[in-house]
Image (cartoon, rainbow, N blue to C red; front, side, top):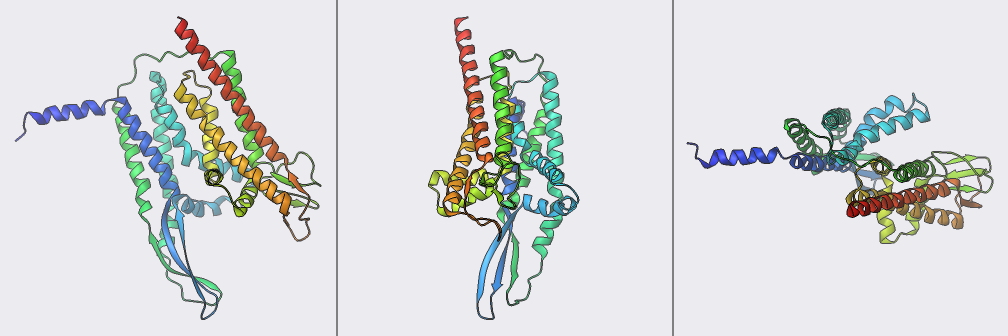
Length: 380
């Protein structure tokens, strides 16, 4: 028998679910959970290395969802496409795995009727594509788990056991939360009026353009140019990996940061080292920062969020600069015929700091514009 309080309770729940901030909050949490679920270990294996009939070394390894997806799709393009084609595939991969972080910033912005419809369908498309992206990695996961235990062989690695880890439930949980938030969004009524936004001034145009160019220059310096080179190299040179062309040789950002790690990092530098190692995350947040600088609705909260990325980028650049100093002091033999000495700061390191400096100047310009608007609003 239904009591009088039950309809009242159901009505309150229905009214709460109709509040726009509920769907945005659930979507935000769901996107974060999904992003974490893509990168945490979901499966592991115990391995044995048999050095001789007596010596046996036991070790273990783990893999995440993005690892399985890479193992599934890498053979399809690694040998058939050029280097720039592979970079394009990696860019698509970054958009799918980290595009939800961009959507979070858009979900919480007041939008017009048309803008709300566009964001809902972009959100839906991204969620479907990401789900298909993860499904593509299931065959590799199944093969990883079902691989039989191999018999011991001298000087070889044998798999003792393969198993799933609790992290396997994190991504499906995020999918469910995000799908529920999407259903709530489509049930909400569309806004009748458009939000009032202040027009961009010439000062904001200049600051946002400087910030965007700074992010682009940082990416070129940190990922497309060598961070440390030998004295025989020209002043400007591009390379996405280590290289050795005669007496000219160079190392990329990954290797100089690894050099800094091996000689020891203080706790703060160690944090920056681990955060900046995930280049997809660093590039994605950099793009979000550049995108967010063009907003018409400047606020302290928005600019504080935009200030997070330059701190991460600067911390990663400082770790790389420490690694450059290590290589310059200790030397590095890239090949058997290349010189292990005469290393110095490469063009990538300089360009990286120039880009971060432009981002900082752009940030200062945006804060100045926000202060001008607040003063103008107070005076009126």
